[in-house]
Image 1 (cartoon, rainbow, N blue to C red):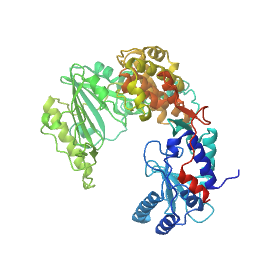
Image 2 (image 1 turned 180 degrees about the vertical axis):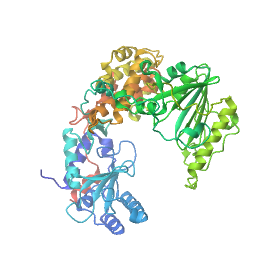
Image 3 (image 1 turned 90 degrees about the horizontal axis):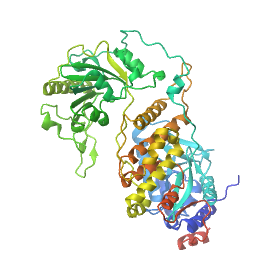
Image 4 (image 1 turned 45 degrees about the vertical axis):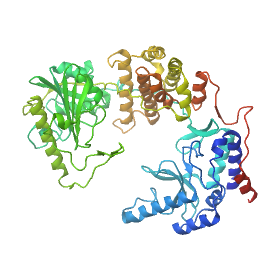
Length: 607
């Protein structure tokens, strides 16, 4: 493929933007001066690729503000001043790391960031002398730097110009298509076809289940320490007043056909067995007026607020968990009373001050997060002697156990957590609804001016589209719920209803797929495309739960955020009864045409 010069690609980009996205076109800054570019290269002691120099002589980055020009994926081109600041920062970091620097697949002092959206991630130029000089790559903080897609900035801009002109997808691991909305250029991820994902439980049904561990087998380590903490290196222990073991397990979300006595080792084995769906296991017992549930592993149900609300309904529940940090949560009749967490010294909304209720609690250490005057949170000081930290953590745990025992009169006898206890695998209850995604800024006016009734109708239509895009509409319980989503009054989702159990199962299948279990030969049981399909389906399930529980204005953002159709903005506004403002690729008829600004014309005349 013949690659045209950088300035010619910029001319094509400018022409397309001026015609279709004039607000974005106007964000392109005038050229950088040759002297500024040369001075930056000298300070960084780098040889800038000629393509970068030519690009900066076209546009010195972009002006901040709504609708600014971005490359596919959201990276915005940096001006020479920003390139210099970023280069200084990277070189200072590299020099400070010294011999402990990452290898060159992560970063090299002659890599140069020329576009970013969320520092330190962005687009990189290879400024090392050699065959790869001038290549364009991507840098991710957690993944390092990758090259191989574009041998030069000229090739990158050439592909970008063609993508805009023909509405083609462009990108690295993920590809994005150009979308115009209200005279601005946006990039929407190109949706890939989702497979029909298999459930891990469906795969397990095709193989013989492994034999259960022998009774009494207990391979897990025991901490040599007296008290509640003395048997477990990490755990979650939940107490509920006035319940028996069966009711405690039911409130946890236990599956009836998995009830049986289990030892500690058996519970761990069942929780980690893929043929059992990788579901958590809770073991239950009683001490006086209190029932207790004990969990190990990395997924604890007993410290989730949704579970504690169920456990405490009509009574009291207190949960104590430890994994280096100690957390104690106290709930009454479905509502939080207080939470003590050694990782933070502030309260979340709705939580009371734990020291008002439990004055004997250990004070927070210097490592606990604190609130700043502007309401943001801050990490605390980490200057705790590392050789003493485990001992201090265990001492804090023992002190909190003593406070809980004294305040609630819980007398957990030695050995209460050993041996076999009543137990069951649990199907995790639904996460709380919160309408976590705000409506897109560009649609705020449309959403604000629409009536609640109209918005509720459109919300239901959007939810139906999302369910179809993700396969969530393959379940009869969901189909019935989609009919209800357009009603003026929504009453939420009962965890134990057919719909609630279906959505909980979707979340459980998605969580199991994310663990990427393998068979005895090391082969993936659920492939990566199925894992991604489960995640999309679980996200849609969460949006549906929100749609059935919250006012339309609070939840519309959650639904729109998950949509996979790049033209969802036009679809949404058309459903609201307004004219569409979005298109992809070639422009619609009768659109006003803008011409390049004066600075762009002057720059062209100098080429």
